[in-house]
Image (cartoon, rainbow, N blue to C red; front, side, top):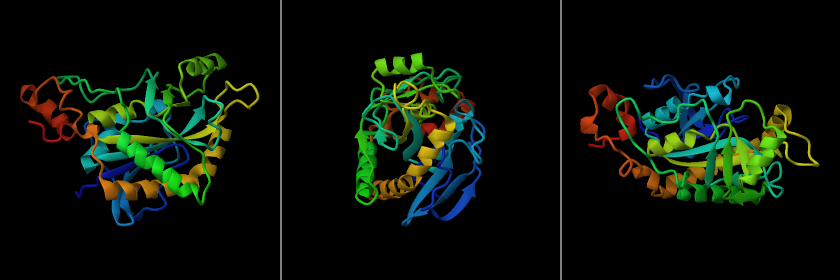
Length: 291
């Protein structure tokens, strides 16, 4: 299987990548079961890209059902070293309006039901999540937003904290105000444990958060519903497609160095030589040749 170094995961409303040429579906088997659906591999301006719809065909998976480990592992098996995530979020700040875009640089993980690591069961690692996204890839993603903004105006917010809740229910007003008191900028249901797993897999990860609503804290704005969130996301979908194509070209041209690419060098506690053979086999793609 030919390696693909750039991957993209699309969230609600982003179920395909229009710029992908010569696309073909690949069914990948992982040690953690199948991913959300077939991974679509093709080219964008000659650059090979792997695309996955996070919620599966027809949006069948609630956030808690998304097979995050299988999704990230499948990307790693393909050779992905740079991964862009796109998702709908609610705004927790007055200055982040619906249809604005955010490139978060921090996360608060409030999920409870999700398998969040490749390790355990015979192997131990503790990756650093102090800087949970790749700053180099995030900078390229922000540049891509600014590049398309000339023809397709959009307000971009660089940096900010994404609080990830379990869902699938939206927040109560008490919860929404609690998240605001934490200093969170946006709220979503899918970027954790996705970002943690990408770091364990030594993949440089960045996320584009597209605001669709004000959650339910705002005293003058309507409370979020699935209908309004998806409607606003679809308004952003065309711009998201252009941004994706642009950042893919930038990553291909620059191939930025990332701390994520060596994340296990200082995190792996159990030496591969001390792992049982079945554990080494399960983690082979993640360990990526580490002795």
